[in-house]
Length: 204
Image (cartoon, rainbow, N blue to C red; front, top):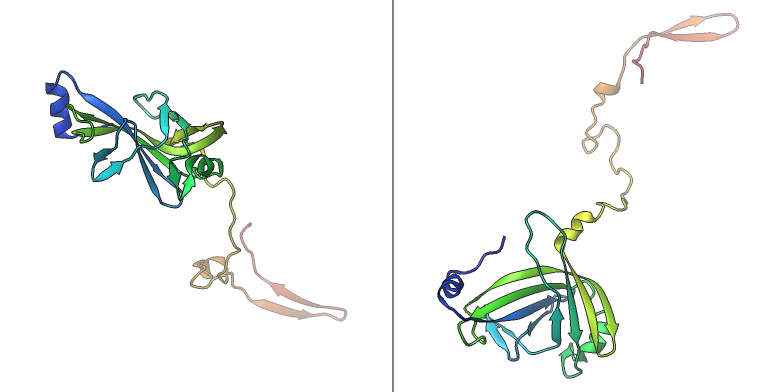
């Protein structure tokens, strides 16, 4: 379910023309956040500045009823002038800098000046699934977080042996539930000695 702010709802219902732009937020595995504007100028939105960065061409997004795993394909042009961690973005991406990153695509709207949007709506959010670097750019596949439901949990189970002692307070198994009582009788004979017991434990 997608929600929008009251000012944006008023704008969309009352204006015959609006301008819009895409905003892309990338959270790297180390926690650093990259914010890029899809317009030809920086955009200030929700207290953050989305700067000009790589040229981003994306696939379409869709809205469906029910639960389905969606994907988003980003085709990035990576100019050397754009730096990430003081490294040209092309080298950063080629070195695996987007591994484990999350991506959010948001579209913002304004009456005329897109630099100060009235509001926006999140179109897609997910994690980087595949990166293919090519000359001058890269193709980045993003898959929605619903794909995590396709993973067997746990795929491999590793656990230590039980550290408790049988019947102690940590173990919690009752000793009384596993014990039997009886009397042992000794019957001497010339050749052997037999100790008889009346124990009759239940099967198992």
